Image (cartoon, rainbow, N blue to C red):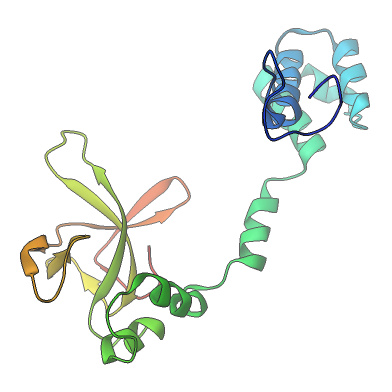
Length: 200
């Protein structure tokens, strides 16, 4: 709320911008627009507000490299997100017990459940499908899943259980053949022939 200069859960009368827009997007847009079309002195003055002083040679760079250098000086390197994930997210083996307890509706003392909690390579194949992505021609889906136990290979025949599946009524299940496997590495999909427990 601009008039009271306080954060509120509901927008003020007449509307108002969200905090994310005010404190994150607008400064980013300002930096970007300055790097695109402003004079060097204007850019220097604006960056000085952030306590950032670039080398004189940086100002002669093209728009994209200049924006990259300015953002890196203000926000730091992009390793912050990765460092936070490494330090605070549990490994697949450590986090699988909590994941299985939360998602698995079968008996928690069964051999299958124990194999999933321990991320056992030699256990029965069990995966948790997180999302289905349609292919470009919309004729089939690619399943984004985590291997909880066992090893999945291209050519394996697997039983896919739907949300409404129950052991007493197997109507919401189907048997399919694994045609392709990919491991995601940043923005790339790397094709593999098999995937072990913990793989996404």
